[in-house]
Length: 553
Ligand code: ADP
Image 1 (cartoon, helix red, strand yellow):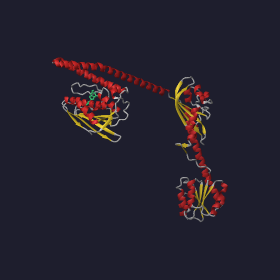
Image 2: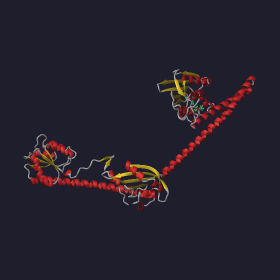
Image 3: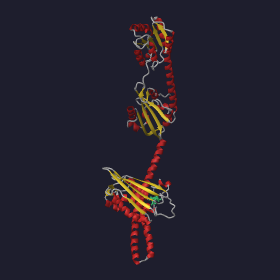
Image 4: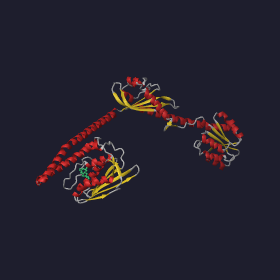
């Protein structure tokens, strides 16, 4: 099978999408330039050289001669030596600077015998011959003819070399395309007739070349597709835009299907006239199946994760009711025992209350997390005075901070500044940071510092909770905001906790449009910084709803 390489033939005309500058007309480059300031001499030269049947170009001065030489190539230059302004020798010198005529032979026309020195200088400047005026017509004609013939032969050689290089390139490409096994390549006429069919096409479609070539490209499409206007729709698109790329199922001769990566390119000839189309089709079934598997696995995982979150949300909701009952009743029993002065049982009841409270905190954390993950976290956005909200949290957290003999330091920001955000969630974030600082610091300092800057439509608050506690190993810092991650601290006592607080903080900060970060050094202390916008307009993935409704959940 011979594959016509239309695309490749065309490609030669274009470089980076630009049309290449056209080759010089070979006959024009056989032209002879005649340079003399005397019109009579120019006319005489023309008459003498006319029988050579090559274009003759006149120039009346050295300057004009250089202009002509910049425009086109000559096979030979006849140059008068004595001219006003730029003489022949000077002109010859400059000829060597012109890209087109750098190597063009020059015949000097002289009126008198030249000194030997002058002749040597002229040869050095590129003269190849001298003719003395008044010249003998036959001599000057035959000398000029020699150079024209030489030039003609040189041109022929260049042409032959270019042609053989092009032919070699064509053959190499043809060989390559014919032998490409994994890519189907075929050309289609402007009317959709298949013109050739490579080995790759035979392998991928299962049709041998002799059964495919000559048929309309529609034979590769189903009856239904043909009725819907394929492949013409594709061909029209390719013709309009130069190229069409698509992926779709295609059918083999044996009826099996494969996922095809199809590229159709419109082809044009040297003159830009439309010549047909080139189809390049790859079998991408393997990739497609792999992608489908990944997508299915992802869907499955997402479904499972959603189901898990929903289950956790329901479970924690259900657990809270009996837990609250346990807490309520133990509270009652505690009060009664306290009144009776039964110290021994009081201790047991205290343990029940402590454990029940811990369990409730855990259940609340799980409920929060699963709500956020299930995309069910609902925010209540309102405007409030930041200093007030922070002051409230600090007072709630004060007892747990001082319990470990810690000093609490506060550095307040602007007391009047207002924030539009979710107050409950913001307080939850701060309380969690303060209770962690309290938990991991003994006889140290827990410090809360906040600032806020407001502009007309923008503004940020920055709050840092730092402590002088046990700190966090550098190796754990990156994972500190992941669910259930707890640093194995070597402090010899068990510290309560779920490893969920910081994960929830991170998700809440995201929802409030801000960030949370940590800096810590083992043994020296930790510092957590929260940055939040002062005006949250559209909290991430959440809806606002009335406070009453939120309180019920
Ligand atoms: P937990 O309920 O365990 O405190 P968190 O998510 O709030 O869960 O914290 C995760 C882990 O990060 C903690 O178990 C602790 O190891 C470490 N951590 C958090 N805050 C501090 C802190 N201020 N100092 C030292 N370690 C901390």
